[in-house]
Image 1 (cartoon, helix red, strand yellow):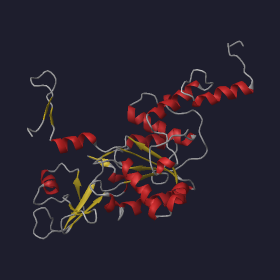
Image 2 (cartoon, rainbow, N blue to C red):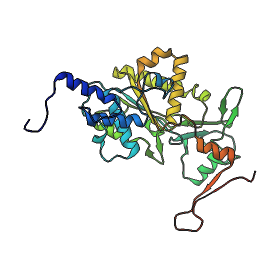
Image 3 (tube, rainbow, N blue to C red):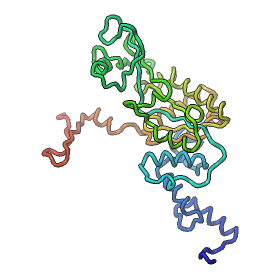
Image 4 (cartoon, rainbow, N blue to C red):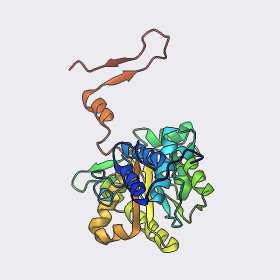
Length: 318
């Protein structure tokens, strides 16, 4: 009473607590937490059991561990200045291992070019960085039409792709694969998790893949490797994993879960080994703007503000 706090009966308190699931948080005894939950919900980040196989159709309130992971990702994604504004105060004694999955083009690709008498092939073939490599010769070898190491041929009968003969391409191993220009894509996230007691290669694990390939290609190498990564993490930590990642990591992981459901133990394996699937900015509706530019031929020319011309759109004449 001295602090101006009105006491409530346990029934009234419980009634006010349950209002946290309502649209309005004004009558909620946990108003701050309620607003945080609704903020994350508005971003479409609350995972469900069904959304792991067909996201994002339904929503439910997450566990404390899910909120912790979601809060960290939300903090990094929107540039919040205070992590405490998004993280729920209470913590669970259960800690789920986290597997971070690489995004589109944000992964290092290595090439082993063993073509005979080819200007892009070294005398002693070895694995070298092809993407991203700022060396001019390396860039020419990676993309030039007649010597393109990263070029692919697509087979519509198998939905699989093929590299040039005697050229092998792979994503760099471990954390080296989740880098661009030498900088870790998820560096801030892993540092934040480490500050909470997580340990790299123990309960924070990387999952890189060749982002150029088709789903049929991923089924041959990337998906089985992803399956082993999850199974090993669950075996070592005794808890199911949280899967998360930015951009194309979302449809890649979704395709993996459907593959695991169909070919590796069924839905029971997913339920046993995957605690949550937390996609961040996943293009589940496709890259609409890129498709418009490709099909319609739209080109966007940008001129810095203050200079004649400004920004303009150009379209094909027919």
